Length: 349
Ligand SMILES: Cc1cc2nc3c(=O)[nH]c(=O)nc-3n(C[C@H](O)[C@H](O)[C@H](O)COP(=O)(O)OP(=O)(O)OC[C@H]3O[C@@H](n4cnc5c(N)ncnc54)[C@H](O)[C@@H]3O)c2cc1C
Image 1 (spheres, rainbow, N blue to C red):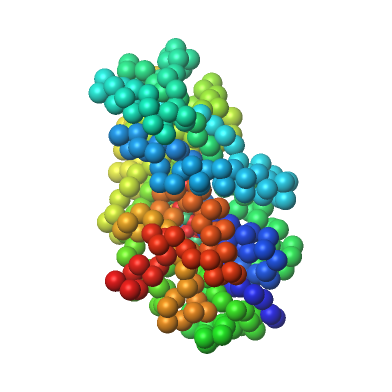
Image 2 (image 1 turned 90 degrees about the vertical axis):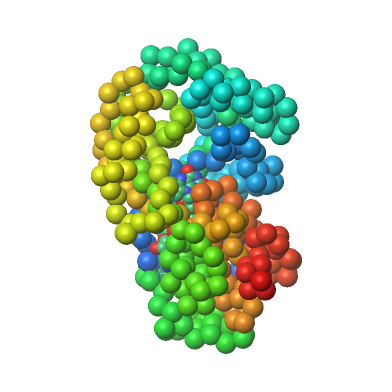
């Protein structure tokens, strides 16, 4: 079987890269073992223009966001499922200083167009918010719809092998790759956190993986369209059900949910909510973050038939569409990658 590209992994990276290559008329085979707790399956899919205690604009947001909206809308049309939703982020300000910092930052500069003060009375009966709240224009990618719908689309076109790609069975030459009867010009690894075990890329790329845990909770009577953010973030799922996250741990013995992080998330919930809730589920996943918090993509300098698309860290949903397109342009037309995303920065250094 002849393909143009093989892709290992169908998280948000493999999904957007396979979409971009198919759009460009390439023949693609995606090989994915379907890990239920992959980062993309645990994530809430939030896109937030500002981050941190200083309300700084996210990196390249003015380019990334419009491209993401356009791409997710196209996917929505193609797949016939809801994929993208613009949502205001109701940011509960935790102190007087934070309120002043928010006002100073958002009264000028780029963050201004994405933010506005909020009428705190709206959620007064539900939330503790003595220092008020602010509204930030954000969005959610509905990963729980997008990932299975894209998988079904690939299956229907015979472009998906539901299995783990075993590196020992891969034949690599300068002109291409062969894997169990499938031949292609190149294989692009979109393995998320599992890339650290990849024999070609793992040893070269400085990953700083971190584990995140989340809860799914039911809050009777509380039906918000907004994402609610304080020390924790509540993201609406179905009616009265919220994703609550998340934690960051760089040193962890395994990928399993822990009692300690459940207690931490519940403490955040109790500080925020004036009403009772029930925990329905707890999940944990590993974020594929790099040391400089930038994507890692490109072809291997010594094995030009092998490539990688990774390092999406905490922002897979805003980064993946734009970066997948940039990688496609690089693969098909030799267009240079942004230096801060190109893996050459590690192979040369
Ligand atoms: C708790 C938590 C909350 C998050 N919240 C958000 C958020 O709100 N917004 C946001 O933008 N980002 C969020 N993120 C980050 C986001 O999830 C990641 O940036 C993104 O999912 C990374 O996608 P990926 O495709 O690179 O990796 P993954 O999602 O890990 O996907 C990798 C895929 O490759 C497969 N695979 C790996 N190796 C092989 C192999 N050898 N053969 C076959 N298949 C293989 C795996 O089974 C998996 O399906 C969150 C992450 C976590 C953990």
